[in-house]
Length: 242
Image (cartoon, rainbow, N blue to C red; front, side):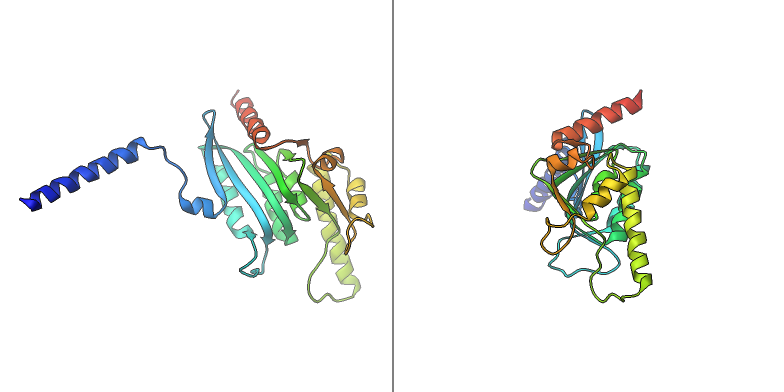
């Protein structure tokens, strides 16, 4: 008798579980949060949120205590978002100190060539190679308290003091300047000027811009927060449907 009751209870529990799963809203799994991404619905449109935080990791693995964004994780996500029939908009949230130049530029180039409506939001900081990432989206936002550091290309470790090294640095810097100028309202000359200012950084040359300064310089499109970025994406999606 007890065995039959146990079986009945198990069946009822399974049915209750299935009913709860059918009625409860589906949310992203824990693994999505661990990779810094989540898809939400706004006004019936699915918008994917991707975070770029800490240091952008390139070809070399950074120490385990570092907060990193791995480009080999981000790039496939961007391809999947662009090809997705459900996701209609992409929000990039930045709080990064910079990192590997080529990895950062690779992500930025992908973002700038996406047909999916994109918006970037700088929170905390969008420093160094975070600058091209911030301007790569169709509309860029920054909160007033955030800062952005613009400086020349630097390299850690052993550097050979030969003309070829200087030429490589110059070409790398040209790539960054050209990309930023093509994807924002700032001119190449003004951006180079910000790179070379002395007196602002203790151990380096360059400029630190707050939110208002970044907008005034033409680097970022407008001051705003999360709601402003989401509203822009919502409008862009609506316009694309007509």
